[in-house]
Amino acid sequence: MGDNSQALVGDLLTELYIGGEAVPAGDGGRFDVLDPATGDVVASVADGTVDDAIAAVDAADKAAAAWAATPPRARAEILRKAFELMTAQSEDLARLISLENGKALPDARGEVAYAAEFFRWYAEEAVRDIGSVTTAPSGANRILVVHQPVGICVLVTPWNFPAAMATRKIGPALAAGCTVILKPASDTPLTALAMARILAEAGVPAGVVNVLPARRSGAVVSAMLHDPRVRKLSFTGSTEVGRVLLKEAADQVINTSMELGGNAPFVVFADADLDAAIEGAMIAKMRNAGEACTAANRFYVESPIAGEFGRRLAERMSALTVGPGTAEGTQVGPLVNQDAVDKVDSLVRGAVDGGAKAVVGGGRPDRPGFYYDPTVLVNVHPDAPILKEEIFGPVAPIVTFDDEDEAIRLANDTEFGLVAYVYTGDLARGLRVTERIESGMVGLNRGLVSDPAAPFGGVKQSGIGREGGHEGMLDYVEAKYIAVEW
Ligand code: NAD
Image 1 (spheres, rainbow, N blue to C red):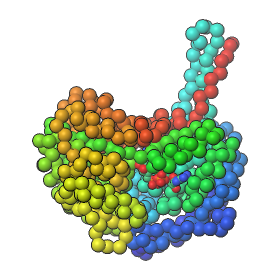
Image 2: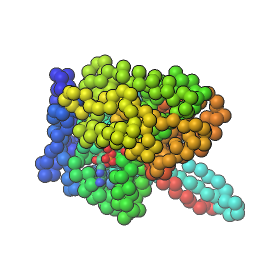
Image 3: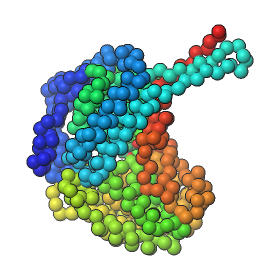
Image 4: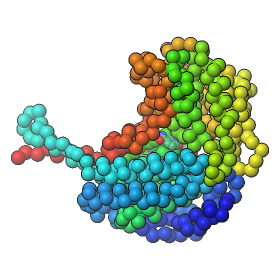
């Protein structure tokens, strides 16, 4: 960790943030946050307990009525201010993300801009939350539909976008008039705590946003989901944990939004603009070193161009600069922790044992920290686990196909359905294929889909609900129907 990073960390909030105050954990416990570039300890953070979780619900409950009654314009102005503060502090925030998550600074800067935009977007949505009045078909009465805040929300976020996954939930929740408890991933709690400070400075009243870092995530989240005051769970993370939380939420029939894992196919037809496809592949694969739910996980390339596509992708991958995320010039930072490296390595080993060839990379560089080499695999067996599981690392497995039906069959051969990418020069074919692909989102001749103004989310086991866009706000309101005669 460099001197700049030390100065950055010295000023950070590292306690729990409950009721507008920094409070130590109930049992005084703390846990370490590591720098993935070195494995060194960056900071120690309060480790929330079940009692702390209930204290956070108390705080959210105390603040709920006043926040719901705060005029939408006032809520909007606070969110707008949070956008401005985040933008003004973007460089420090980017360095902090890079420090605790490992991602390269350009990726971290991109994340801060994306994350801040959720506050701006939902500042605008807060004043456009429109209900409806219609006449009942019988003519007997009017049907009024008004939106009310869903209530106290528990927000659980992953480590791969520590700022954006938080703002994508906090923005619409606050716009809708809800109070929240954010439980960040234990690898990356510092960014979440920094966001709490920004929101307080922007004017968010005490108790409206509470942040509860906790290593005992199962116990603290479960306690909150069994508190009758909690009405909403919004979770972003793995499908495996999502399934557990859906079951937990069932006990109190809690409203849930689930943003889960992906296994994105990247389909390239022979008529595609190959320059654009390579460019898109680099973005879809290498943003965040592959640690994105939207990361291209499987490349399906039509046979006549597969050789050239593989060669060109390998050339681009081997030219990337790997290094500490916080160092200027780094394009690929370390992965988040040792487990992540081990998982990527075992998937690559499995593919190679099954007959695949690494045309570039295929192992870990000889340096401290949690690194993996940018890797391109060809001749991957269709049953290889690397095509079934999220790689979450800088590895691109390539499989060839011979016609449109085969491409669609391969793309849909997964229980996931978050995003897919399709490259073709024939727009009619592109639209036809995107309609048949089972995913919540498609990038058509584009390697990046995430946009705060668009509904982000998956089908099949990639999730329930949408974040971003107008749809994202609807996940935080209940539509109340009033049958009225006048
Ligand atoms: P994870 O499921 O391990 O953890 C996510 C969060 O849940 C963390 O805060 C973690 O502490 C908490 N958690 C873990 N076990 C828990 C339990 N039993 N009870 C309650 N909380 C628990 O996921 P991760 O490793 O942090 O993130 C990577 C995963 O997130 C990938 O699968 C990725 O695809 C997914 N993801 C999805 C989206 C999306 O929008 N669909 C976005 C980003 C990441």
